[in-house]
Image (cartoon, rainbow, N blue to C red; front, top):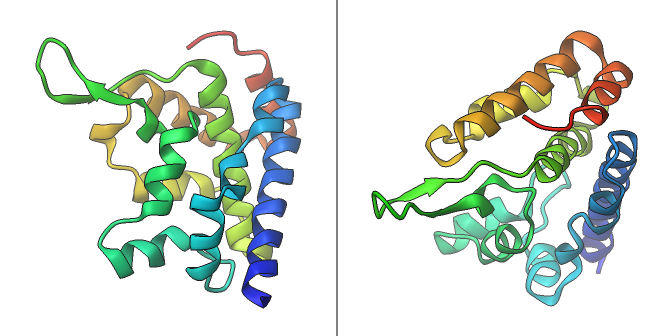
Length: 176
């Protein structure tokens, strides 16, 4: 029962931070709807079962136990702010290939990366952490090149200019 409440606290904290950032960068609807699938039966209870300490995602333990994560497969299939959602078969090559993310989902992914880093890192969070995570955990062949480059540019802005200025800049971006 303790794991249930701790997991609920972590996802609520994450969603609040994402919502706050989304509101500041002008994507109110994405902020309100962000990660609602985490409360679904297919994600919530398996995540409680795989909850460790709130410093890492329950999907990692699920993946370790099963060789893959049912939680993650469900989550990425419903949430368009994950670049893994944007992979499909290229009609010309017949191979799987990344698709450029629409701007509103790229903005939400940016907010998600910052919020997740803040939640998982806690007091030790530094502005560099979301970029470090991107560079160390993203297999670039599965994220569209323009999407990756723009996200990386925004995360570098976040490091260089800080939160307030970066959020203002991103709010005013209309295309990439």
